[in-house]
Image (cartoon, rainbow, N blue to C red; front, side, top):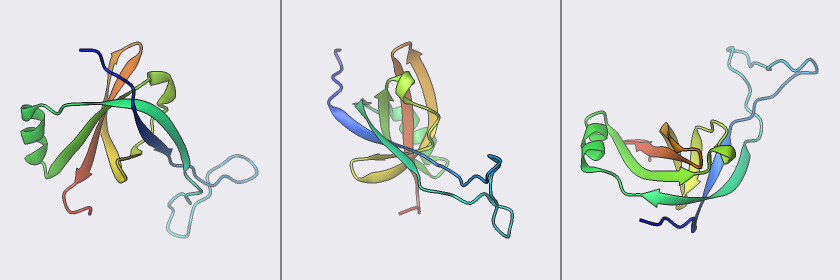
Length: 112
């Protein structure tokens, strides 16, 4: 099967505020203060979700929405994506080969 890289996904990297010394800045309750997210659009293609993965995720109140494949050199450990106008969490990744990494994108039931 020949996959085409016709789709686009926006990878979102969380960026946190740093002080003059390059250290994280924390709020009053000790959480790092988030700055503007870094967003980058990259080409991807979508893979079908297997029946076993669908049912295993459902047992944990998780809905696997998409398996997206991007180039590993474009992925920098982001934990969130926007695909088909939906903000999704990256549950896990799988390095398929030197040219492709699979992102399992989910939406926890009740997040809507």
